[in-house]
Image 1 (cartoon, one colour):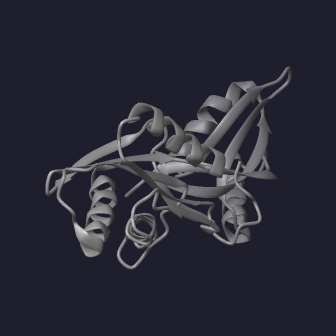
Image 2: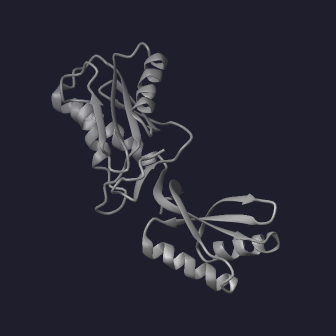
Length: 229
């Protein structure tokens, strides 16, 4: 779970559920880039370890990752390449990736570039370009999502009106979280942007939809994935 006290209330990350791969060939050297969503250093290091096993005969398994809503964790490794020619260019490709015009907020991403040497020396400049371009090209094809911190607010209503009210809330643009069914009521939970104005607006909208019979109770916060526009 992400730290709730982060300054950022939203950032961009990879879609969950799988690795995203891309291969680039430069002067007969193969650069195989693997991207994975990683919410912790352990998860990012697991990616490196797994690829070392999968590509056990490769000469280099260079890596970079950035983690956290505020991107407070940043790591890179040249893994035997000349210092500064692999890990740092990969990290900069992640950090400088624009997710919208002028916005660089990509995080919770691990990147590994597996290199099979092709027999032709690339030189320091060639290595920097190859590792940077490998990560950038992989990001070009990887699906992204927005991850937003939301305040979960609940309201308890009669079973008979819960379904209609949930539909009305969705139609009003509300993002619904989980619903629980209790003996005497249904508890609907709404994921509201984590700021006072948004919570007040959601409360007012609920009052309008229920004729003043239902109110919102703010609870904790959660990070949720939203479609990337």
